[in-house]
Image (cartoon, rainbow, N blue to C red; front, side):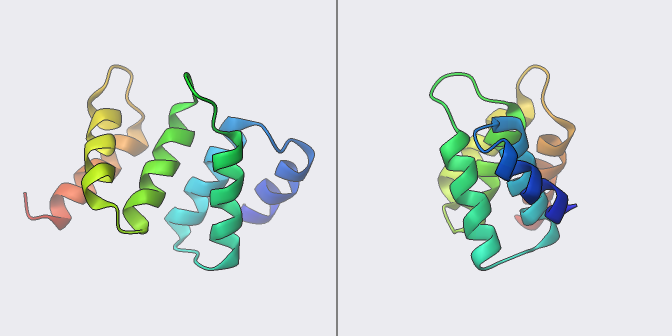
Length: 103
């Protein structure tokens, strides 16, 4: 899946939903190194001030958590998981975070 997403992003590099899906998939798969750096760069480039696809926002929050920005990441993840029309993935990720924190 990662290879297909990466190839598709070469054709549509500024598509925020696709960039979010690519980064989220990398994070879920536990991929590190240059490929994760590439996914983060593409997601940041696709990010637009204002309205973004929820999956792109979730992927960037997950990246922040992965990189150690736990305080900001936790607040943003809670916002995404508890908002109206929250993504299932955001709810699950927030639940996992709470379990990790023994809450």
